[in-house]
Length: 586
Image (spheres, rainbow, N blue to C red):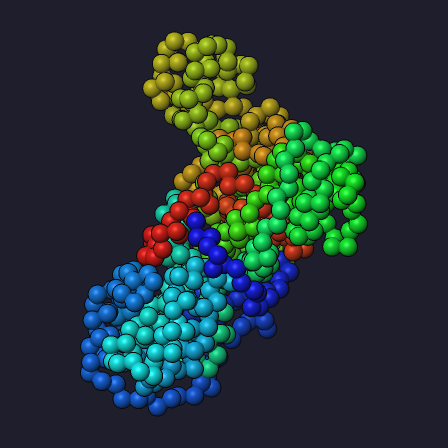
């Protein structure tokens, strides 16, 4: 993982926001236009309207020939990441527009735009990026060498800055790695820029380069809060982790003796779970109510049961290196960049490692949240993707998938021929005709094994889908649904399903989704679930976007930073790819 000491730096700016998914719009030409009215940011063309034009200095044939050679090779040996074959065509097209004259030099002087760009590349750490990808540590020496540079060195300087800028723009806008590399159902293709055009028309002569490049990033407030949290954790990491919190043989409760009170107090204050002015008698080595309150706050931010007890799992999380937390925030920023520029309607978002679903209102605030159960980490992981919810079904049948039928239902019937009756199930054929809901004969079992018949569970309170399901058609056959197993929602780790997402408050969610479709009040929804007709489908007048997401670092609307375990290993996979440097899979 890319966690070297180079990350230790100070915040260069602060990003303030008020909601998780509130779009701020974008002036970048490849993004959907903002719908925020008077708050719509300026387009690059508007920003650059007053940009002064500089008279170009003469350019030698040797310099132009060197730029052509670099464009042809797709490599530049002086770069820390010399292979830019993934940007070679973009590079060629950009220099075609200038007839292979420098984009960022006027004679042996960098243009004002080049100076700003170099500063941004040097500060790329604070964007959650790897500075080596943009040659951050090399720019001072390159600038110092311009006065004595020959044509080859001048061409190399200009080419290096173009490559670094293209990487930087793309990495901030759509992320470094294409999410399809991880089989995520998120499409970045539609939001890609025409990079040569963007660089030469919007950036090269920009009156305010910073303002233009600020608009390439995701517009979501959750992204901006995560960026602000990254600055804080970079500062914490720069100051050092401090002494580790000592292990315990068994959980410590209020009043118990604990020799690590000094280390625990320091760590809780460092992370903000204990006020700086909190008074703790660390000489007494007693775990008191103040420490327990700080531990409870910490537990609530790290996916642990907030009981205030100092146990093995809590201490393990307390001792996670701050550099690891920095990486979690960086990984979250990367995945935010994979999202569409905005959703057509406020979305419903289920974050897998957090085991939480949030529904957003028209003001892009969290209107409803609840715990969820997701797919098992070892066998039936819930996929990451986005689709539109189109209908809800009250008192649904559970149409058991072929894989579950083969792996679970057939073996159960083989052991107990009356299994169907016990589970309120029935076997049916391709026309929908019910074959049996009682004892299963050898002939019927053979047809079931052969895939000629299917199994479904009848509607009712014991149905595995509960009393309502929420359908957003997708190739994964994944949906949201209720469940009779309510006890699972109280557990801190909740990966128990076959891949679908079970919701804790199904009636409230249905009423929220149908709030603009009379007569679907909460009371009406509850009635439909408890005593309405079986398999009642209600189509949505306006489809609702659903995002099944995966980030292990979440910054709430109140600014609190929450971290969760990488239950599916997606962070590990992402960091393995990023550690190799560009060109990244795209």
